[in-house]
Amino acid sequence: MSTYTQELQTTATALVAKGKGILAMDESNGTCNKRFEKLGIAPTAENRRAYRELILTTPNLNNFISGAILFDETIKQSSSTGESFVSMMQGLGMIPGIKVDGGTKPFDGHPDELVTEGLDGLADRVSEYYKLGARFAKWRAVITIGADIPSAACIEANADALARYAAICQANGLVPIVEPEVLIDGDHTLDRCQEVTAATLKEVFIQLAIQGVELEQMILKPSMVIAGLSALLPTPVNEVATATINTLMQEVPPTVAGIAFLSGGQTNEQAAAHLNAMNVMFPQAPWAVTFSYARAIQQSALDKWCGDSANVAAAQKILAHRAACNSAASVGTYTVDNDRQLALV
Ligand code: 5MM
Image (tube, rainbow, N blue to C red):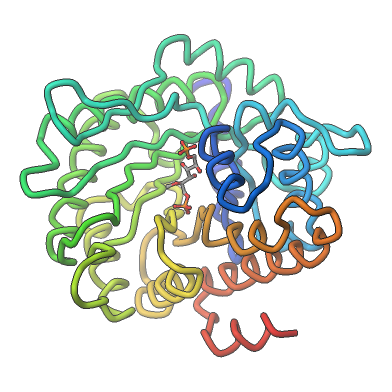
């Protein structure tokens, strides 16, 4: 039993508390700037800080959000009143988390495939983030579906890195969020996505076992099993929910503390409706099934804000609405009609 066992267990359980999910606001500067530039927002540290302040000061956010994943720059920033973001979150009962991966790089010898880097010096960085107040971490691996990919080598390399990251986090006090994302890009069928997701999760849990990761002290952040964005036919909501939960039931041990999905390029309504259907149709699932969305919570609010302080209150209203919708989906009470009606209020 490590020094952190009890704390890790408590944090993992709190992150997936009933009716709550995780807000991913951990875009690296490159990703955040790209989203800003599309809207004509200058890609400055001050604008990134102001945007993160808008998010964290959204009224009632803590009713729906258990914790938020921050980027390295953000965890060291403060609000305009001078209070650090970490302190603000602690005061609101939202657990600070931190993205610790170093991003994806081309996987040498394997065209069109990626491997996530960032293990060098990770134990020291995790210890530092713990001292700054973080209590959980996130590492994202990316698996691409194509004609002859993913390769077994790509799945294994990414699963190995995820497991080594998770073990380092647990040894140094942070609950690891393990995020193997099977990209939605492409014209693949739902069946192909299911096959790749199953193979990926199988390897991830083999590697987690090899590294001795405590499953009760980690959260899995998977993508949903869904047809590719350019597939001919959209998949009905209940089919996505069924294929996703069946795949997880097959590959994810019941002792994992919780499942918190990424939205991965789905629309706001799709991300909420799919999560909702899983909770309605599979109440017997052994884990809490909730969200860890970035775009499906934030993007509409960012579009409204557009870097203008006059739009902060309106943007916060949109953000709170998306958080509330996904909270409802996490307990199976979301409807698209309510979503649209409340969005108009
Ligand atoms: C897949 O991206 C994660 C979840 O976001 P969505 O719900 O929008 O799919 C997200 O947490 C992502 O890992 C972060 O935004 C960091 O991304 P970058 O590209 O900066 O590493």
